[in-house]
Image (cartoon, rainbow, N blue to C red):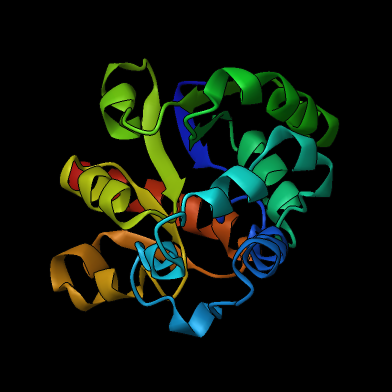
Length: 202
């Protein structure tokens, strides 16, 4: 096993939408629908205390409410069977508070060895990948992380949302992003990325 696939958590592996909806209605009394979220900074439209949404939805006491996107668990098992290691990663300022509960949540779902890194809000996943032995590619939703991964030459798999679709309007990025909405597609996309890498070496 010499290739490590980094996998983002929030809005990539698990569906944050139910908790975002709950948090917006409870804290702000209104809801910004997914089709209105045309920019990654969409929560700022909630007002000065927009960060409260993340504190609410991503708090450790709500981990038991998290649900994986359909087929995400099966897809990762198939990728592990392709002899990949999995390194789960996430940005969250409450990283020390979160790591234990998140690890237990993941261990309950996945019966294989994995690594987990919860970065602070300012840490960079791609810089970390650069120094990680075997770091191969990343599954992500955040536009700035996706751009950096593509520019560094990593196979980059984008869980599609309205706020990251503009990336596909850039022809260079579009040619180097494996975009998907359905996790069923991920094992095939990983195989395609492997085949493309092999062809580029020839």
